[in-house]
Image (tube, rainbow, N blue to C red; front, top):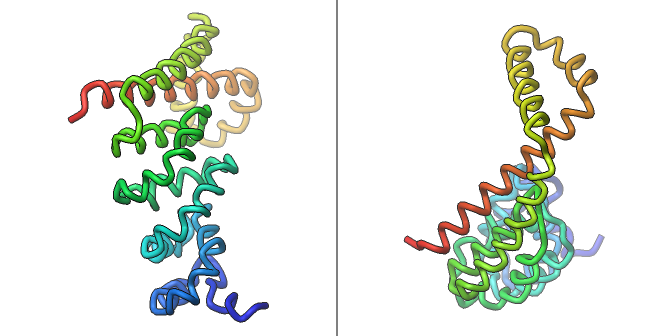
Length: 215
């Protein structure tokens, strides 16, 4: 182990090491920045918020590392970076990331919504024109609409019945959930996909309205 590695957190509970890093000279912390950013891969880890506070003192220095992370398309890691690390940054710092954010904005992230976060971040700092942002969102909405239209009224009725049954079991017979899932496995997968698309559709609509009529 190199000497500099001794300063790194030993595990996700090692808050003491994070606090100690805050008191170190910048020259000792700089080589550790890439490793410290790795602790933002899961924001449920107890040290994650402390890492954010620490890294916020090194905005200029971590920007190249953030650009690399965003290019990796690790959506959960990217989500945490956008939501917890750079959310409150001034425009002068976010603007340096604008190219990476624009690339991310053009992807389709159905689960974490990092593409929408990228558009929202760019727009909040006025680093993207309204018509460009609106065009990106319109394209995403069109793709979701196409997916939603592939489901028939009959399928939607079945999904509704399954949800009613699931809730009934949760309140009256939790032990029966396993059999319920096994019996309806294929349709439940279809239901999950439909709900995922519907949630995504609503998220895009909210952002479209926010950009069209900014507060």
